[in-house]
Figure 1 (cartoon, helix red, strand yellow):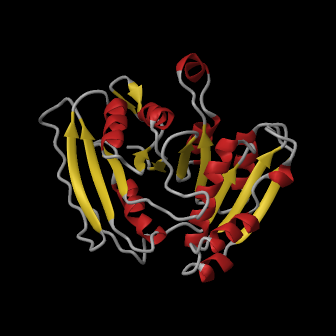
Figure 2: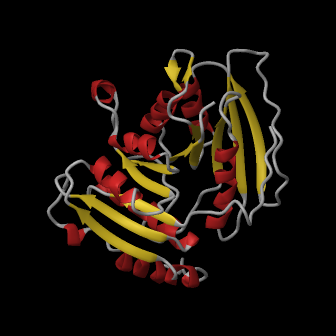
Length: 287
């Protein structure tokens, strides 16, 4: 496996969509979406589907202008002011009760290339009875999606807007091209004032003969580690993410391919549901 990384070609994000239900969990995701949009000088849309309202106080949701003012006061935007001024912001309510349908309709009319979503605790029977709307949106849109958990570790400081995203876990699988996730992980450098990444490639397999040759780019701001484990893929990914501890997990997924009696999307969903750090799902084409 060869990874050729060109920082001029493998950029970044131009249009960030943040669907919100106005909950506290959504507020955490909002901070991540805004911090990314600022550092990428991206277009930024907050979208709320009427009928899924967590509160009747839409104007009370943290405003982009107010949050940027807080981050300026903290000194975080001192070197990012020119980028922040290029961010184009939209704040939209749509008269569609189904939030996934509302987002897909919006995506169909706009060049969204990243979604930032909040995820709540969905363990136990509730998790088994219904698919997460967040995962359904990522699956149906096939757009690079960052899932920000309700609890656990965050890589954006809500008060200052600073980004601490340096230790990244990338699960690799011989049957799924891991390079899109690896490239997205390396591109994180664009979010950091002083890039110093440590990316761990994790290969989980019970087949000792199934080994992957991993060629990674020699980059001055990135150190690469390789870890091999056996066992349940989702459980091992979650455990290694906790051991590192990872600031985020970046996963390539085609959301549909079947492996060992389970769809690859199921592994991704299990990691999203249980990880205590943000998880980025990077869509790839199936075989």
